Length: 363
Image (cartoon, rainbow, N blue to C red; front, side):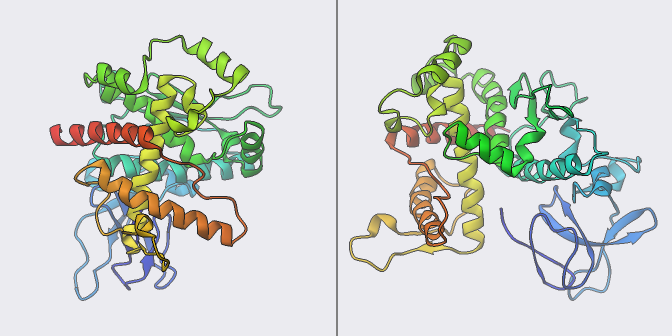
């Protein structure tokens, strides 16, 4: 994620900001223009204030997403795109089900889910991937259901994907509950954004692999997805991952079934491009001042959403993750990126990259 700037006062802004802490203007994200705008009310609508050095404000008018009133979105909708005062933005149009927000705790968890979802949608937009909304006539639109286990926990919600519908349990937005599950499951990594990236991977398997004519290439790289999924799931939780799995898979869960191997690899590809964009924005370079550290050197000075090939991403990613983990250890924290990327995993990441690049080139 890159940094933004207030066009009124020049203050550095973050993607989640709703007001400029320097000049006080309200802020809204313009997804079509990929920028944060300082806005002022103009009757029932909003307009962007005049940029620095200009006397006139922009003439276009906007509405805030309906979820802005619930402090759950800061995206803007062009006024001419909808006459409805309660219009949803392009990110929130994917929502089909949200929890009962009358309870403050559920409301707060949903807000955290929405923040992670907007980061996901930002990445999908930057990659140029298809994101059909419900009601567009697409046979498999992208839909989000955010569900609660219920007041007594008697209706267990499972996070997952099924034919375009991504379900996310509200419990995943509870940091203590999620950490407890992570520890019990023996997982090295578990985050809200990570869940989104994994589950959306299943959606894009349908789009890019099944519908994109890449099944045979996929099977050669990841294995045959026609293997019995239920049996694979039972075997994984009964026996655990096979010995030596670290040499070919990015995580233990990826060993369960080719679909999960793809989804875990996909999630890591999204981790890479988003984090590398942040590093590029900050002009981060890694150059250890020790002899023989050539393989730990990198200068991240390129757009990770449009590299020549996956090798450019991987050559920058490896030194950066070493640096991130070293910084975390200096703060007494566990590794921020507790994964390794052996050659076989790098080839899988390159496979994902090539499919995404191919889609974007053909679009």
